[in-house]
Length: 246
Ligand code: NDP
Image 1 (cartoon, rainbow, N blue to C red):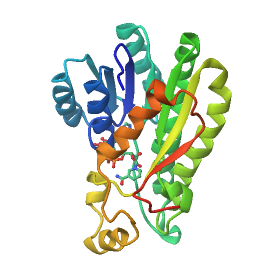
Image 2: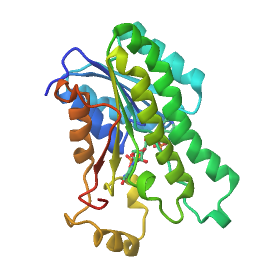
Image 3: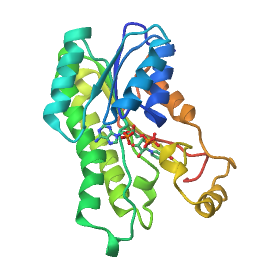
């Protein structure tokens, strides 16, 4: 699979799953634009990605702010004159049982995970419609399918991404734009590093393949979903979870 001549925009692309997707796509020829809220990690990611020889653009952009997102998309269009792929990856957790969950923890998670996905998808949809083609992949979670105690905000945001994906896939199909979601299970990143050993061990017992996923496992599926090999796949949610949820 190759992405020569393509331009990819990845949100939250400075580390974790987002950076892994950026690396994989750059390796197979895509120019990369990443946004994130942390300037230091953005700079580090940019240096690592430039080693691929592809063009790399970074922006300290908060996906919850539509105007910031829209002006970054304009900068991508000014530089590359096209945008082929959007990966909605930026996401946060603010876990807590409902009785203790503050309104601000609810709002923060819904804002970044769900509204951020809306903002970026809306902003790329016009240029993609004009180009008569594009690929949009959003990183949901198996928690958006199963629910999880202590993660009502996160589950609602990820379930929302799944419903959003199915709706937008139907809206954009006639313009040759594929819209899909990936639902990872337990992937080793900074987000999961902060979980207790007890919780990690109990989760491991629920994974038939007997190991946690790597960021590359998600990146490999993302690459398939933006390649020509998946041209007839849209509106789908595909799990990368070692068989955890069936
Ligand atoms: P990380 O926390 O490692 O990376 C997320 C990135 O998003 C960080 O660089 C973060 O910046 C950035 N970010 C946070 N808020 C914003 C914002 N408002 N605007 C732009 N960027 C932002 O997470 P993962 O790589 O683990 O997760 C990536 C995605 O995959 C998330 O959507 C997550 O929910 C999902 N996922 C992850 C799973 C896992 O097991 N790891 C399982 C299922 C789904 P900063 O450095 O400042 O925090």
